[in-house]
Length: 130
Length: 429
Image (tube, rainbow over all chains, first blue to last red; front, side, top):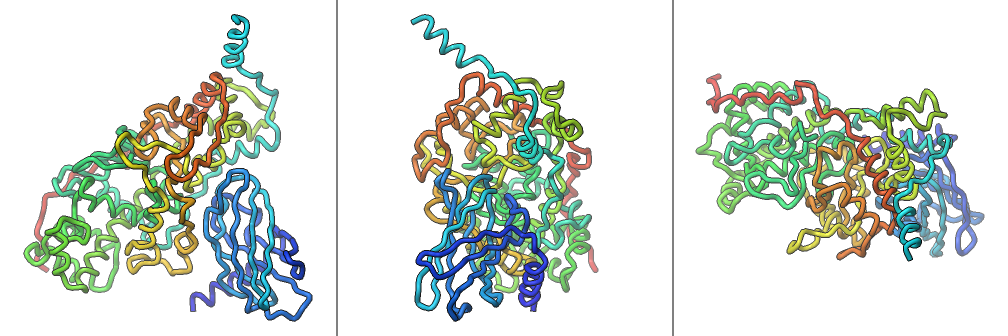
């Protein structure tokens, strides 16, 4: 019951945060467009927060079968993410809830996505500055 | 030759001129460090009495009570002394014996999602439990502590008023019987471990509940410990009113130059960010272990311990819903965390020497030099890079760090240690 309420509230927050920071990129190989929506704006320092990953495809791919893994780090400091964020819920319409993101240093961060969809493997990389 | 030496000396010791005023970006960064930006402590969903007034007072009494030890001589305040900003001035903590870590300060600890240098605890209440049973710290055991609460009328009444567990009174009273429940703990001596194994599982659970509740009261009190403003905070407040201000009487030229270095060339702000000057994250900065002591595994081991801890956010003694345990669920361990220790706060360093996880560096000069050189790590890899700070810049950086010292005088209610009441049998009811 609680979990249902929790995800419902996340969905509500998603719809309310129209000013949330968004990042856009394509994939390798080409075929998908990735949009990341931060659920807290501006993206905070030292605070656990969530993002919504939106996958846009020109094909009729069955999105809820997608497997998404997220990694990343700070190239300038040669270290990875402070946390181990995970996609925990499919929100519908190609949108996935990514929980457990926390940036602990100001500067340039890289987020790398590995996406498995319809037996194809895609990668995407996004950059943001905290 | 002489002129080259003179030029080098001049380069080392001549300060760079200060710009007329801060840029807007610099001001924003500077203000992010001000204590005015510090919000109230974040909620602790695992501790439903985290902000309960009675729990705060109960926790204060427990904090100063030496009966929470095996020799009636060690309290939390033995190593977390209020007059030393809740540290002890030692390289390594000393309780019943000598520990292998430097005592961390407590003011501001409620803001950290992870506790201890290696982050082996994921809440303030769970952290408070470990020293109680550590044989070189308090050396107590959880059955002894349950007995203390059951036998001391003053504690018993407070406990029952705070923790309204169903039939808490009946449950609590049975542990007053030392014959039936002798000293026992899964982490104690061989004899205590045998005694623990002989206790019924249901009673073990009740004892663990009482034990964890003591941690929750201790955490409730620690959440109230204030962080006092420093000269830097007053300077930041003045800048809010007059952003064009660069120099004034609150900070010396050296301290202001040190602040510039802190936010720039010296890169301190990378990890020492926010109003508490810490990101509460884990970094390997190649701090050497003491001679003869193997390097500490740090966070790579600490996270494994936290994940296996029965008193973690996801465990049966936590009041949190699993969905609220984000720090634990999404924690990152692995090889990158080898040798990584938690970033310490830089506030009130005048009271908290010596520095680093085992007190390896005695002075701030030594700490600054450590980061200036950024040597290769013995285990893992050093995230820091050499800074090439000049002699004058090291002096300026230290001047800025000195400006982060606030008054150590705390309200009397925080420092007054209550007189422990004598051991008492429960009144017949």
